[in-house]
Image (tube, rainbow, N blue to C red; front, top):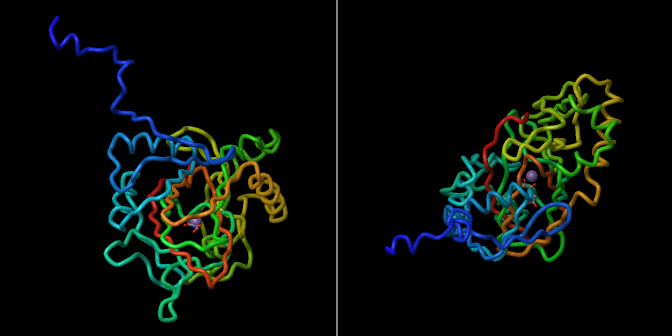
Length: 301
Ligand code: OGA
Ligand code: MN
């Protein structure tokens, strides 16, 4: 026997280099999984492929005890796709020096000026940038400083929310579309240049199907964006409000949600196509500093 023949093993018995086994632990029955034993600063292609698969399967990934420079955060995030540049926040500034893709979320003020977006207030349930034609695919959020209490981030599984809709309601909304108001952000601030909303039927914003198909998993998910100033196209105002209230109270039920209590060095990666998120408020005398990237997306269908 030649050495070559001896070396040949049935492929099923060989550990496949293409799919390393990840240590994946679901963090709740609703959504999310923790990945242990992966250093995002030095991740290789095969491990990333497995991580990406886990992200599609679980909607949100948590990785703890990471130590990432902005360059490493950007390099890791780029593996998911092209990144958006950080939009100007409510204080008019976007990005960090040298890394226009890195958005700072923080309540910390230096010389009287906020160093980041979103302050310390509650951010209500939303998916990111639902009000544009091509909302982002997802985001990577990395914690540098966190308050001792408060500032938790919640996630809601929109596949499950859709699957559990009563069948008559599901049939009723199958072909409906929502207009997603673009004037107000998730913290309730009016975006720069936006006019206060007086009638949701007239406000600006993208129109997307209420039920969308995830382009990578093929699964259908509810797509609600955010409640405030939403409008279901073609319905009377009262009908639209009542139907939205009904779907929202169903979708944000506890059994579809999970809330993350932050530690420094945590990374959360969410899939914005099948998960909504929110943030609890926290004491403004505490400091919360997060660095965040956002993966460019495509039009929902
Ligand atoms: C976001 C967001 C929540 C948080 O980054 O899009 O909503 O917990 N953040 O900071
Ligand atoms: Mn958000």
